[in-house]
Amino acid sequence: MQLVHEPEAGDATVVASTVELADSFWSHLRGLMFRRSIPDSYALAFRFGRTKTRDVHMLFVPFPIDVLWIVDDVVERVERLRPWFGFARAEADLIVELPAGTADDIEPGDRVRLEAD
Image (cartoon, rainbow, N blue to C red; front, side, top):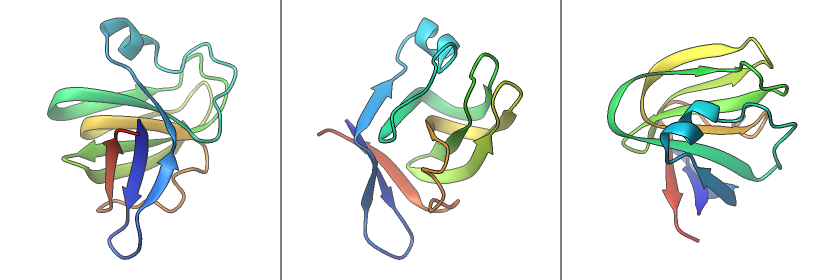
C-alpha cells in the first residue's frame, strides 16, 4: 500500500511507498511508541469508521513526526509533533503519521489517499 498526495494544483506524488495500517485496538494504542525511528518512505495509517475529533500524542515516541488529519481524502490539518511531549487534535476519519519533513508540501485542502501497490 502507498500514500498518494494530490495537491490542489499540480501532479500527484507518492509520499510513502510503505504504509502500515494500524487495524486493531492494540496497534491503535501503540502507534509509534517504543520505536527508535521510522524509514523515510514509511507511513503509519489509522482508519476509523466515522469522522470525529481524534488525538495524537507523542508519549514514548523519541523522534519528531508529521501528522495528517484527513476526512474523505481531504487533508484537514497538518502538524509536526515534537518527540515525547507533542500533542494535537482535529477531526478525521483517517490519520497518517510520517517522518518529520515528509509533509512539508502538504496543505489543508489537498487530497491524500491510500492506494494498493
